[in-house]
Image 1 (cartoon, rainbow, N blue to C red):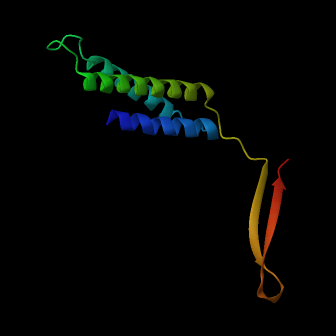
Image 2 (image 1 turned 90 degrees about the horizontal axis):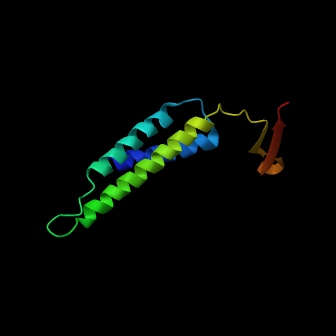
Image 3 (image 1 turned 90 degrees about the vertical axis):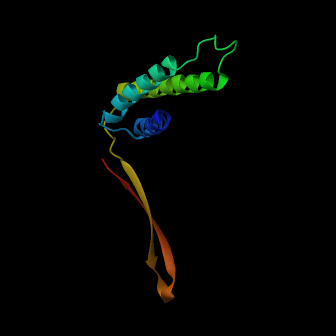
Amino acid sequence: MLGGVNLSLNTLNAFQMSKGTGSKAVPVLSLLTGASSIIYGAINFPKDEWLGGTNESQKTLSMVNIGLGTTTMILGTWNLITNKDKKEKLLTWNLYSYPAIENKMALGLSFTKKF
């Protein structure tokens, strides 16, 4: 379950870093869940001695938890560092339709530049 939360937060962090936002809730939550995932993976990492061998599936799952937690913490930290307010668009465009002569449809394109 923690892995799914981490993947969701990684997606939200990437979205916030690309679009810009003033909210710090997602990066802070990312740091908490990332650290939890790292701790969970480290605690459940199997010891080398288990009836003469190791539990490879448990080892793999622990390594995935540690890796995913680390990625979530890195993205959360990067989002906190680069977190900025959303920029106002200075140039916008719009594609629209309007009725033309003889009941035909025509297309229009408009550009707006803010100064």
